[in-house]
Image 1 (cartoon, rainbow, N blue to C red):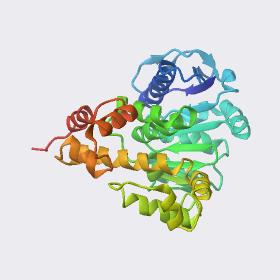
Image 2: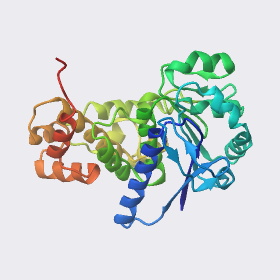
Image 3: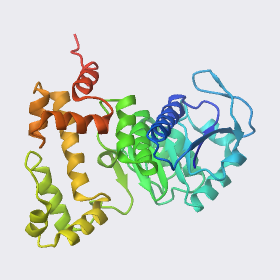
Length: 328
């Protein structure tokens, strides 16, 4: 069971809850459709007293729960606030002990845009990295001078505390959560469903407390770089391990420990990411794209791409190019 909560408060920006909620529901639907078992999603929309809330767009939101029903959620979203967040902040002070308890219980907390003010007001971001909507960065830093405000990063993580500086960033972050709760294939399928031109991967745009290069295994970092330069080649992982002075068993173990996936899966992720870039930005044929990323058989490439992205390479190309235009 996966329980995700959304705090509802006045002047929230609807898309900062609607987009992640729909992405998570799509992931759960796909998991059940593929009969993977495991997760079954429950979403709780909660306001302070359980009464309706007026969103920033003037729409009335009817919650299903009160804040008291958020104490056991696995993941809690704090939506962005329209315009100046301080008036809303003063009216939600009774929610701060809940946030402190959830953080202490190691639940995941995700603040969108100026929703980060609530985490800061609860004292959870003291001496930690955080981001917020760019327009309020100066006010945020002035009010909370001990926070490490990362103006150049749209996503920050400090342990179980996440901040997303924009709606696009929370889409990327939600894709990351889906990968953690379900799997990478479902995450890519949901990204393709909601935004086929999905932006740079979560880890490319974020700041992660306590991490410099994500891992500190220099031999594996060298292997990563070597693989990135050999996408069009057939890879013998036994020979690759030997190249870096390891047995294949030791290489596989260290690689997965450093990057979270086996080397073969990492290579497939690199190849498909490069294929997406080529499909979007070049006029190469589908077969040529496949060849350039290590799939000399066009049929095998199309099958692999469809399995991961839930659409064919040609459909993907049409969907991403449908959003390209020339000004004037």
